Image (cartoon, rainbow, N blue to C red; front, side, top):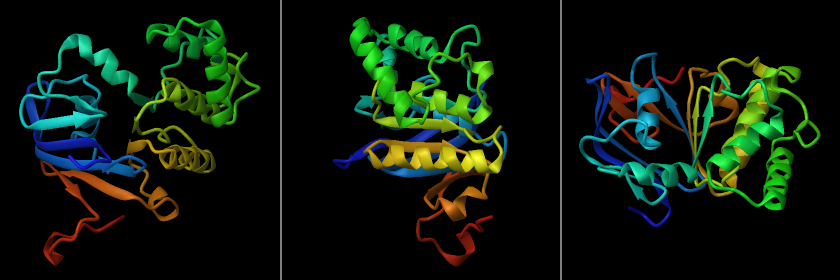
Length: 236
């Protein structure tokens, strides 16, 4: 593992409900690197992300994320792994009966924060980063979909993670709002975090070029890696 490699998988198999969907997965992602994860529905993108944050067990191969080895990781270690990982979901998964700040507070308490002054400062900091400094008192239904996704990103940043895993974060957003979210995600990667984003929105690639991993035919292909002409992927 190179000095700045923050995500590493070697010869890993990925299962969905005991069905093998990806095999011999090999990938390395560095600190400060933004990468896309693409592929048709059902090709294993979400399951691969779940392997990385410890939601699915790693049954073979070798994996290391943010300093944690994933093979045989103990249940009690998984919360510590997840403090190093920020997760951004397509469907937001916000608590609709609580304000934006209360949503962030809920996550902080769940991950061991208890100093109220420090919590308030951290909330102000992450809301500032995502452009919502004045919206903390609002309820989720009082803000737009794009703003809700920014709250989700703020939530992912709360514990100052090394890695951001994003599963279709622009899937429910219009193109203009999607661009704002992408600019924010790229800014986050430039702060030294690794960002891996699953997406179907290939229109983003021209304006936001980055390394691409593609789930296809049970494999994960590094689209940008040099390959024989017959194996080169056509970028959509």
